[in-house]
Image (cartoon, rainbow over all chains, first blue to last red; front, side, top):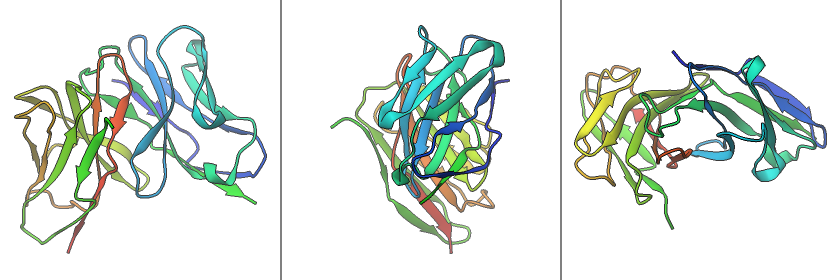
Length: 116
Length: 111
């Protein structure tokens, strides 16, 4: 069965510092990988996605992620965080077909806190 | 604009009452999903539908029911059999080889 692990429940970063959020997945085939961000009481917004090709993908708001097949990882990075980046971040894995047997499987999320 | 609309944003349920959460999309996506979100639990799949008039149970379907009579609509009913329904509910849709698009969610509270 597919699964996603986000080992850090909470991360605190100073404004202007760099950020890396970890994501490890387990999937039986070539995965489609996603990072979403959620502000309190809101839906999820897509930050970036990996389907194939270049393993370093760029997203919105200055975020990037790198797919490492050998490590089953898809870590999210940002060189300099802003106070507005404080939110909940979710990594997800899905099937190629789009519908799939069970949609997207999500990690439990990482809560990002930004210190002034 | 294309997107997913969930309503209502807030919903209150009395003990023993059934309530229905609405989800409508105009993205022409075949697949639609309902997720439940609890603090520290991430998103858990309740039901999904890949085509009209067909749907499948997800990981936590007990106490919930759905219908898919139209491509655009995928309502979720929280029945009285769901013993702990207080949560944030998210609806999503997905096309072929695309990401999932989410609505803004419905917060359900038992009173």
